[in-house]
Structure formats: structure tokens, C-alpha cells
Image (cartoon, rainbow, N blue to C red):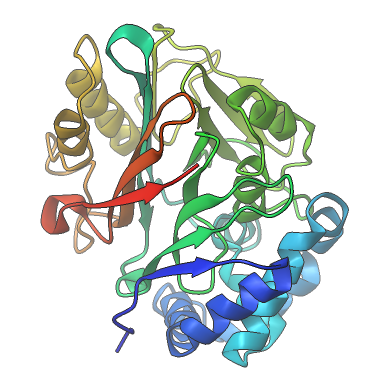
Amino acid sequence: MPSAAVTLDVAGDPFERGLAQGRAFAADIADHYAALLASFGRSGIADPGAYVAAMLEDTDFVDAIERDVPHLLREVEGIAAGASLPRDAVFVLQLLDEEWAYRSRVHRARPVQKCSSFAVRGAGGKETWIGQNMDLGPYTDGFQRVVRHAPQGERPGCLVLTTAGVIALLGVNDHGVGVCVNSLPQLPSAREGLPVAFVIRALLEMNSAAAAAARCRSLQHATNQHYLIADADDIVSLECSSAGVVEYRGRHRDRVVHTNHPLANADPYPPGEINSVARLRSLEARLDGKEATLIGLMAALSADDDPANPVCRLGGEGVISFTTGSMIAALRPRPAAVEAVVSLGPPCQRGYRPYRLSR
């Protein structure tokens, strides 16, 4: 059974932060890795262990990690040491989107569309709300965690929603910078470059949305991913892939809504993207032209306006993903604290609980 502790505060150098996570969640990290392998088996992969070994042999993400964010690899190594697991097992847990991209290239697997996000300026332009449903597989249920990192030197403190053993799925830092993500399976990926989890944490090290966007543009992206970056004054939407970075500028300067198909220089409602378009339309209908309130934003991420393609996803037959977790954060000018609400699982079932990140 997963442990009862779901929130952890960590500090120290990167290895020490990883070590604390590994020790606190040791049994759950091992179970999470076993559940991941079992999910591969259910998808038709005959030998999940051999498949993982082949993927690690056929890809090279470590060079980009060592070049751009070596301290985060030390954190992964600390997690592995704390959980008494091989580094490769914990490293594979970081490669959620990279594994899907690899499977699509090598096994011609059908890409999974997952995650719905938004960033919306509040009334009077005094704050920005950023939020996301993180859709993964049902095998992740029970392993949801919230990790709060203390500041270190020039790196801000941050609050990340994640799963046991993973360095981040999305998050916000104590400078009021929020980062959310959406898979864009239509765009190209590569066998090398920086994986998504490491990009997220790299962006959360920046002190403004503009600085985070500049860093995002400078990175070599391994995987097709949309990064929604915001602070109290700015919203930036970047569609990234191994081919480069393209900025999406929506119809409204004060809001961006995104699901799982490219919007920059493209039809926002392509006929072949039924699930992604349905979720996009649901969020647009609930957010466009309305004053942003926490109650309204929670309702938007809990919606099932199209029951066949809901924003809040429960897994099971007819739904290809599961909402592993959800976060909404209010980004305000300093010195106001960053306030967030988090759901550990589908918010339409489990609701939200509050978190605070002091400055």
C-alpha cells in the first residue's frame, strides 16, 4: 500500500534532496516502478525489462542533462540511493513522455493525448492563475506526491506536484513563476535532448516568466511538449519539439488554454483531434469572457462537458488517460505568498487541498 505521507519538504544540496525523497518514499518508488513495468506488459510489450534496457541503450538523454542541469541528475541519483534502487530504474521514471515518443517511433504505438492547461489573468491584472490536469495512466494512482524544495543559493524554492520518485510533473516557485505542460504528439521528438521532467525543473529555477521562457528557448528539447509559463505579469505559451520552439499567441492577451494539439499557426479545432479539441472547447467555454475565480477554475478542471472526452478523466473503458493530479496556483507580485490548490487524483472525485509557498 502507498504510504500515508504525501507531502515532503526537502533542502540541502541536490543529492541530499534526492536522498530525502528516496528515503521518505522508498517502498512507493519501488512499487511505482513495478507498476510502470506492469503497464508496459498490459500494453502488449512482452518483456518490459528488456524493453526498458533497449530504450536506454537506444537513447541518449544524459549528455543534455549533464550539460544543462547536472544538479538534477544528482538529485535523481540521490532518489535512487535513498530508495535502494538502481539509478536506471529511477531514471526511467523520469521519462514518461520520452518513453511514449520512443514507443511511437519503434513500435508505432498510438500516441496518448493527455493533460489540459490554462493561464488566465485575474480581475484588474493584479494576478495570474495557472492550472493543469496532469493525465497519466491509472497505474500512477496512489503514488501522487507534493514536494516542496527550499531555496538554494540563487535557485528559488518551489512546490511541485509529482509521483513518487519523479523530480516534477508541474509546479510553481517562490518568485511566482508557474510551469504547466501538455504533450504534443503531432510534433517530432528525438533520441537525445533534455527530457520534459528536467525542463520543468530548469524553468522553475528562473525568477520570472520571461527568464523561464528564454531558458526554454535555449534548450535542446528531446520531446514534443507545450510549456505554459506564467507569473503575475506575463503568460508565455511555447510549443517545443526536437525541431525547435514556436510561440503560440492566443486570441486573448490575458489567457491561454491548451490541450494536446499544436495551436501556433494551425487550425485550433482540427477534425482528427476529437479528444483534444473537446477538452479545449470545454475549457474555452468555461474561461473565455469570465472573471477568473478559484471556484470557476476548479470547476473547469473538474468538467465532463463532453462525457466521452472529459477534462477530468477517470480512466476505464472509453477514456484513454487518468487524471493523476491537478494544480491551480495564484501568482501575485512579491511579497505576497504563492497560494496553490492540489488534487491528488481526479479533482471531480477528490477535490482540492490548499498549499502555500512563502517568499
